[in-house]
Image (cartoon, rainbow, N blue to C red):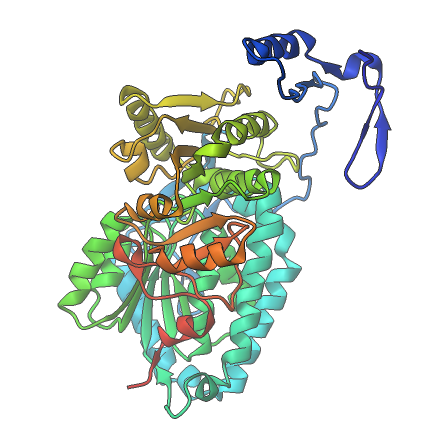
Length: 530
């Protein structure tokens, strides 16, 4: 049998390789053929296993753009950068190295009170009296300034959170600008959004955002609130506060009136102070289900408006008539994007039994190609886990999955010696009773299960306390509509995954929260139309 001397790609282009660069694993092929042929007169052809060795390794391509990282970041209250009343700071850690990046002001209840007073003053002052079209101009200006500083913000997002630079650059920052642009257009059209009503601002909004998409979550919260005429007190996550404070610089440079946006960094006590403050009219929270339940209980007795976007355990359903290669890419994107730090991650894969073996082989081959390493390298696919605490949580649940009898499959990639890292992984032999099938891991770990019929797939997918998202893979449109109609999830993707648009509402129900962000439904959360 002759060996290939080159590779032809799908677009018709080709590349020549030396004989040693590409080989067929003939012993493995022969062994597989013998096994399949045993006791049979005819047997199906076996796909060759390609081995490229290290010939297609990528050279390092680190991001070289310098960024203005400060030694210490203050709070942003009333249009000014100010120190916390206590004078305390906490360290922001680069998860790729485990070393300190900078110091962040540790705001407390006194600082939150200052911020709420500044927001109330701005609401009663120029911002509350400003024509809606003029409000929209500020949002347009912020969007353009985000675009102008997108490389700087993307690098800071990657350094602070650990996600690959190509995700920060190509996904997060474009969506940040898109949300400000989209909501800028709605600012003077709210009466068209809610015909027959007279929408008006709710008042002072307290917003608490998570660490997995810090800048994007800030945009998701700030843009609709400002478009509707509200003022805001924003609390970023403790581990990822840097880009929120650089966004504060953009807001200050845009000329937005003082006090319209206030950013208070700090630990959980600062977020609790925002939720409990008597002069906050609305609370919006994105984060864990456990904390969301506490906030819901606190808001229930205060009369505050509330939206919650919480955890998820999404099912990605793969039928046997799906385009398998495309589906495997969707599976990879669904669980390994942003190291699995995604509330809507497709962390449960349901595969129809007839294609299970083929899908598992393709999935195993694909995770071998994922590059884990320096998040600032443009070739990196999977970056660092956000924090030491989150890494310990992932390890705990993976160990539990092994102890409960599931089989762990991992990439053989080498991990850096410093920082917080976890290999892309998936489990087979998973049952619905396993913790890894029930609890949100929030890491690069997939749980694989099988089904025989669409009815069984729907039942398994809905067998969760969450209801945030789901995915369906099939070549039949009728099947997509039938299955999607019966899935109990707020967002359902068909033959794709993790696609976002500011015009499309996002949110869930059950223990994944309530309320929507994006689209007309997202605007409704920030206006009083009673």
